[in-house]
Image 1 (cartoon, protein in one colour):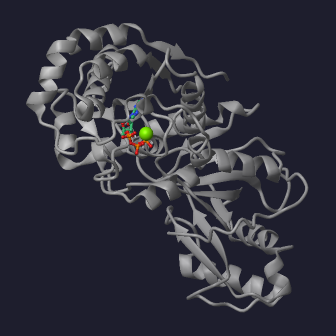
Image 2 (tube, protein in one colour):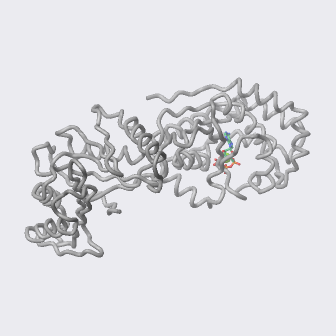
Image 3 (spheres, protein in one colour):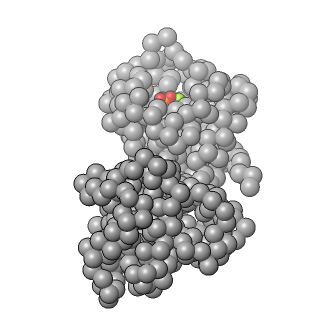
Length: 415
Ligand code: ATP
Ligand code: MG
């Protein structure tokens, strides 16, 4: 089931229950519908809770209801079209949904459905240019007096009679969707695509190593979309750099918060530890040694906040720290799994996604990344784990990671 993505929702004055269009509501199509039985129930419950949480910013409480295989969000009578559109856009951030339709809920009679369909078509620009159209009905409740194709023909005939639009069943420019449910019928034309994936909270908790760069926010988004709730950990070069990178990390977390809510950012002042790594003399290994210390610190923090995995924005071969040997050396530093959702993506693909989710602009702001403190002339692309362990013995890296974890500061998101 799909609908066009054009933003051609009916415009106009406030619509109340008494209008031909019935009541404004949203009809939400779920992703990953292959899930069966108990898992499906968990999916649906979690998704409903996440939708309710996302809509808390509105000054009314929408009524979120499970229907057969879909979710309906009923809005208070008298809700304006503009507000309904706003609610739809907010719901479109919630992972687990593939389509968000701004629909009208009408009584379960052929007459009410026809009236609503005509009201939906009325005033649309397609009428002026005599665009092609189709009606597509489906019944989730088979007790409705008309079969789907009968309903298509009834409503399609009326639209054709009144507005003179030609029918094109294969590739219509305008489609009127009619979905018959147990208690009501939903009528709509357009939809906006959702994020897809799984509801946040279904796949456990993870800790994202969040730089101010382009990649790690996209990695965070990808894992949220697979149902993980994520916390964010940023290493700043403080006291040897300014706080700019922290502001950036904070801004990125704010931008990503709309996908999960209640996000937490932790910051580790990392400058002194970096100095110690530098002082250990192994210039070419410094970047990997530092990355291993970040991971060890992140693992310690993860245990404290009950996160079961670490997430990074690594992409294979993108920079010298991301060769296969160096990734192997990083995996070796910790026991927790390191999830790298961008590992097989090209930079252009990652940037396109960053643009779409609204993090690219923030990532491209200038900052003083803590990594630049250690940039050697030639970085090692084939770090040997034994050499790294030698550096770590001198640093007392395990103790240092615990101390660093002790020094974290939480940055609370302002409402
Ligand atoms: P990004 O765009 O995410 O910074 P990158 O291509 O610049 O990635 P690196 O800087 O080598 O690559 O970092 C690889 C990964 O290591 C990052 O995606 C991030 O997960 C983690 N990382 C790097 N620097 C930091 C930091 N200062 N704080 C937290 N995590 C970091
Ligand atoms: Mg970076």
